Length: 185
Image (spheres, one colour):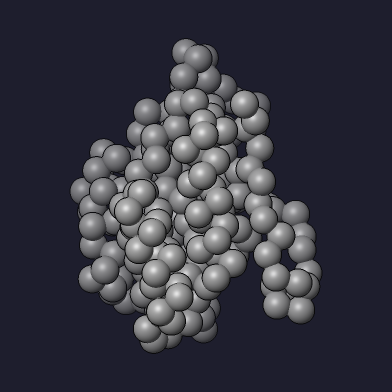
């Protein structure tokens, strides 16, 4: 079993821009460097919280961790001291949904950390408006395998701001994440 994530290359450089290494962004409750968490000492994972796993670069895991809470683990499996309850995150363009399908296939074949608990998938709108029919079909297939939380287009995020109120479509996701953190939404 491999614990590496095989992120598909997707469209050429002209569509996705230059590639660069994924930078890990520590969560606000991250263990200080050099310190060992209770979960690591006890040989298990951190019991609470949620980890957001991007199935491709630019999926929105950092934004979700800021807006909703949880650990931003980028495009990798969570480390032993990070939450074992995970959401897979993808944008709603063709390459993003293809990467999501491929990641679900890896998980189906047990090619992930054995103690991960997949909560579902989160799709982040890549543009305003309704999805084209081909992408809606692919999303239905994904939804037949796991629960899918669809995050609509949020114009304030594009301009570098933060929305005053989160869209109603995010209510269930916010509540579930808060429940797993042991907090109120």
